[in-house]
Amino acid sequence: MHWPFVQGLPESWSLPIGILLAVVDLVASVHVLTCKRDVRAAIGWIGLIWLVPGIGSFLYVLLGLNRIRRRASALQRRHHRDAAPTPAASAPEQPDPCEGVEPSLLPLARLAERVSGRRLQAGNRIELLQSGDEAYPAMLAAIDSARRSVALSTYIFGADRAGQPFIEALGRAAARGVEVRVLIDGIGVRYTWPPVHRALRRAGVETALFLPRMRDAGLAFFNLRSHRKALTVDGRIAFTGGINIQARNRLADRPARPVRDLHFRLEGPIAAEIQEVFAADWHFTTGEALDGAAWAPEGSPDGGAGPPARVLASGPDGDLEIVRTLMLGALAAARESVRIVTPYFLPDASTIAALGVTALRGVEVDVVLPERVNIPLVQWAAAAQLWQVVAPGCRVHFSPPPFDHSKLMLVDGAWCLFGSSNWDPRSLRLNFELDVECHDRALAARLDALVLERIANARHVTLAELDARALPIRVRDGAARLLSPYL
Image (cartoon, rainbow, N blue to C red; front, side, top):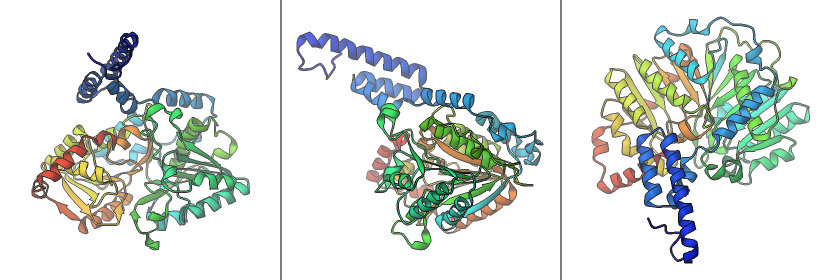
């Protein structure tokens, strides 16, 4: 075996460095064999490690390791040990919310409880908000109404025409004595300039960045991002969905690169659960436990006779693949229809197989994607594997501009999944995400009508069209697909 790093070194150095590299490669190989669940991934990494000694191990450390799990799990265990009982944990016993679930979807509800560790919470109110034109005014009004606490977590927060009103509202809340915390992803905060956290701190708002530097998460820091978008006010009102805070989401202003998206306003027990997720993230990032009186909802968080819902907090810290598992369970439970809206569609082999089996069972499976994705590599990689879902009968539709950043899954007109997760490996394996499942025919009917309207305005993709792509395009798309685990 010849190591490229040894070439040209003094002979007295060659042997010890060669032995060191061999040990490093051996340790990396042992880690691959014992930790990688996918056989093809394990074969690929071991081949790279030994075909390109030294460099292969470095790339494995850079791209193949989940370097945050142990630290995140330890911090979360400490948080749960030290913190005061949460509102949901101390709430009186409630009737089983599964009583309101469609009988055919009861197995799906049980699956979600087992993989998430959270029960369905009945008595919620959920309101759909379309793009920043509806979501931002509602969020700002809620911040201005806050009396005790405001918690905001987001991936992108622009210091622009959309972000400035939030900076001012959060500053006003902090000035009148409200406990305000803002958590922005350490990479997402750099998407706009100047970075907004400086303006927030000048306004008196306690602001933290999630893993802002390499030392916080090792070499894999750029992969392990907080993609969650959530705002809670007094633990009683919450907002979540796919909308970042940036001017591109205000369609009425006719921005140069508009983004269409969906967000949701929630009241009831689900709001307190979303606040709990924020508290764990804040503690992980800053070490501060949000367990004072300001962070406990006053009175009962019951939202009335509303539908049952559940928070799904997933990420590479022990809650791995919660949403992916639930997606697979939803496909298996579907009897009539499945509607999927996502900006990025890079399902793995097992998810592709599940989509195909669902369609072959006679279930209507509709997948709505943007005709023009804002990341070309993702669009090319998706095109390379679309035939695998179209061939067994799934219907794929390309929606025209503006770019649709919405994330929805609907089953049988009775079950909804919405939040921050895309149908790609980054969301389902690498990012920290926040989603909500809801069993509610009224909400599902409204969302189903919205999806069908988008389908009516979309272009249907055929297998013949995919097969007719020119060879250079197919080669380009196939090469992009090789990068799909990291797109």
